Amino acid sequence: MKRFWLLFITLLLVAGMAAACNSGAGPTTNTTEEEPAAEEPAAEEEPAAEEPTEAPMEEPTEEAAEEPAEETASEGSGDAVEIRWFVGLGTGGNEEQREAQDAVVAEFNETHDDIELVIEYYQNDVAYDTLQTQIAAGNAPDIIGPVGVRGMNGFRDQILDLAPYIEESGYDTSDYPPELVEFWNQDGKQVGLPFAVFPSFIYYNRDLFDEAGLPYPPQEFGADYEGEPWDMDALRELAMQLTVDAEGNDATSEDFDAENIEQYGFVPQWGDDPRAEATFFGPGLPVDEDGTASIPEHWRAAWEWFYNGMWEDHFIPTGVALASDQFPGGNAFSSGNVAMAFTHLWYTCCVDPEVVTNWDIAVVPTYEGETTAKLHADTFVILESTEHPDEAFEVLTWLLNDAELDLLAVYGGLPAHLSKQEEFFAGLDETFAPNEVNWQVAIDSLEYPDNPNHEADLPNFLRADDAIKAFGTLYHNEPDVDLEAEIDALEETLQGIFDEAGSDSGG
Image 1 (cartoon, rainbow, N blue to C red):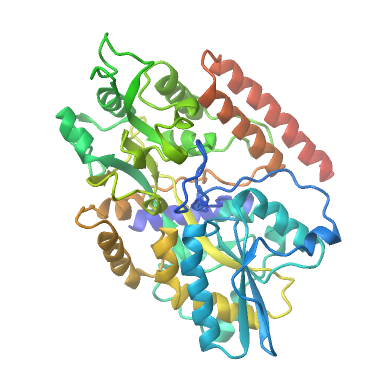
Image 2 (spheres, rainbow, N blue to C red):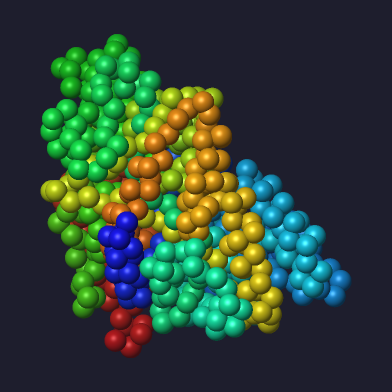
């Protein structure tokens, strides 16, 4: 584990340079990248936890900022100080998660006379613009979360430094790995405290492997598969053997009918972000230190691997396939029609135990001998504009401690508190019983995070992010694409976007 925490420190430096993950996690999920939701998102969209949709900002108006939230669980009242909790930049905005969060708010209010906690829910596709509008109009919430590194992009300079409050209150950080506390020391301040981490790995359907008579994928890093290295070539070959047409032919057969596929071998679950997919082959950034757009060579190789997997080898469902009735809500692995899915721990939110009854997890393969298991991490932050920082900090620490396991049960994140991790996994075991999962894979995957993170900040972030995702939409949905030419075009587009950022800042 020492290696993991050392890598976390270096990941912090990247976050300081730019920013990082909005998982969160996940879905409405992180993360994270970011962060996860029990509601199945539309095809090719990662549920909230991990990665909210961030449209370009419109000019804020006073009227828009004062519009009520989509839904508020409780209204502040009486003489108590009202603290507003904003949910939606990461996981937490879906209906299936709200009951647990509403219960947390009710418990807090029942046990505190001097503070009234009010929760506000927004869906990912509007949360970012809503928050920016509220901030601009002087109507900002007090607490935001769960939120990952990516979710902070755009308002990092407005986050309260928690360091003085941690010191004054004597908040106990001894149950956290110290490097994880340091991870949230970003932009020269302690923006958050450890809350949830979402390692990534491969979910696999044991029944589909058994039907094909194939051994399960490795559960230990460094292990071989069938006497050969567990790498991207081995994953491709295995996935093709697990891709089956209506006549029972697999994708390695000359008789395979690519127009009538009933079962796929592999999917990047809710993989709508090309940077997340590219990081399967290794971490990187599409920009050099001097602001020059530059797509890493291993990212080009990764996109080619995914593109060929969809349109030539046919072991990955295309965007068109994911939008079909074969995958309700785009939830490919949970349909029972996909043998392996690469995603994060937050996806436990969305595996239907009545459909996929016999599943486990495996380690990610290597690329050119290197292992990368991309990481989402979530926290809660307080805005500097809050009129009640002491009360907001009291709420924040209560969420991190008293409500931690209740919230993570619906967020799907591993507790940052070391003493609570065993109980967390016990809860997952109860949820999926009698199915048994080797959760050690998730713990071991924390030693191989992506550095820099796949959700790190970029110059002119929103426009750059839109351009990269538009490229992803193209190669997931269009056959016969000249992929190399499109990657070159993306690089050129990004350069123009990065140049605009330098011009706007006077650089």
